Image (tube, rainbow, N blue to C red; front, side, top):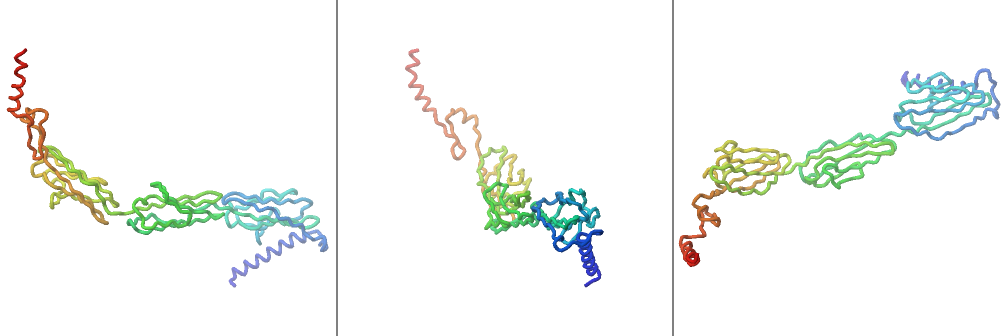
Length: 358
């Protein structure tokens, strides 16, 4: 045994011996017979206190008290007005013929256990014992970190907490809100789909309080694109094609005319890319601009594409307007007239008798 350990044991033995002498054989009093020395022992109800609060230990005195002390396990906290404990949280509140009260502030788990008030009166010794129970609010001590996974991966979230009484733990998906939940330390998600991405909340709760923390899951998936819409534009006018993609991480966009890639500023075209939308703008459509276009959205997990057709729209001219409101544009851009000169002549002949009567 080391010298330090030896002196610790020696000090403990001396403290207990001193207390026994102090309480059982007080100075100036004769030693009582076996019948007189029987002690009156009393057990108080347990004291339940929350961590961080203050607890008061009260001991009734009565009769004529010669010596009294509060003990914690084998340690003397107070012997009368003399403080034996080195803990600054322990202090004397009241010491008189009615009661002997001490207090412990900022109670912690180390303060849990039995306490004894030992009293030597003029008649006989007695003890009063009480057990302190410390309740601890829950605290999450081990939590999964934020995750980034690919769609279809298996995911396990972990949440562990301490507290007294032992806290219960639950998981739920809160953003976007969903029905995914678990009443366990572990939340398992098999083949996670993209709609299970979001913020997951772990709650540890007991009758004292609750602790809540969150974990974010990001689910990566390959792009998907909306179907392209063909657009018709008159020569010299502005035309816009829009390509929308859903992807995580965000997709990069590429535009092609036939098999030739288009870059921003190419032949008067402008490409504007946003988070999930790419626009191809023609500021002055020419004959060479008409044709087939392809938008490609891609990220590290894959790609998707959609096609567009830019076709010509013929504006009405003065000659087509003279043919009346029923003139229509045919599929080739030409105009078919519904009235010919012959039809007009026949109409005048039919109306001639009516005109002569006027």
